[in-house]
Length: 305
Image (cartoon, rainbow, N blue to C red; front, side, top):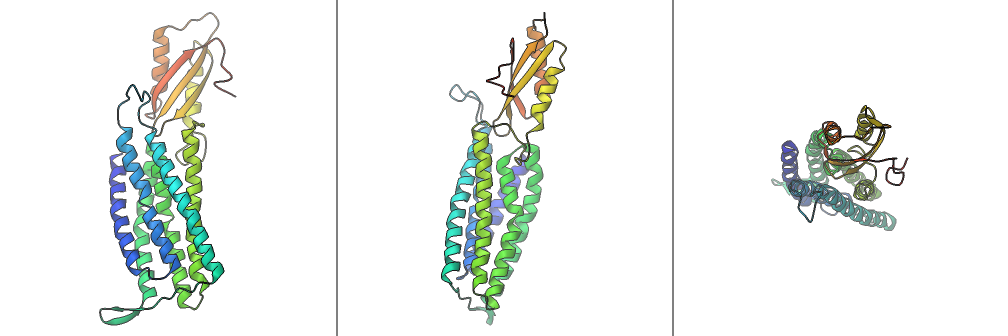
């Protein structure tokens, strides 16, 4: 977690420089404008992560008996909604520019007394500023898996895809230089679509977690394997006839409710229940809270098959 916090702070510093550089050379290019907006939006995931981490560490209170781990999901939702809204706006804006045939001018600027086509400055700026996010994204991806942090994963995924933004923007600027007036608008539309896709994907995952859907892996690619492992641990106990669990993803950690049907003629003792609970909790650090309930039959309405 400490490494992840450091990486996100470095990311904020890199983004501040990137936004300033892109703003200086953007000119009238639609693609450069969209790239600058995307870089500005990239502040949201690291900020959401840093705020969520700070809040999630608070101890439970009478008003919040489950603690504050849900702050991770709230941060994920805030970032996703912002990406979705801005992505939709930029797709409409870029598409309208393409349909109306806007021809953004790229002039000449003086660099140390030498006239230089502004497009070369744009190409250099986008190429150089696209490198750090890709490196940071790959570093954060590993930590996102270890921490089971979907906000960090969303940020890492956006960082890894930044090279696409840089490449599309460079192509658009060079297209204008070659006389292809539509290249700038097409590049802007490609980048805008990427932002919209990020927003849709993250919004789907954030809402699913907040409405207590089945826990998934950090990238939402599959059901989380800990659910099956918990059921296996409980079913292997010698005094258990049947067992099922339902698991709630609280952000970084899981809340587990286990329902166990004792074998015929056996009434589990407090010591047996405590030992079973400990075995479940010892499976993984993410299993923070385990509640076991001995029942006569598995409640179908609470653990649907």
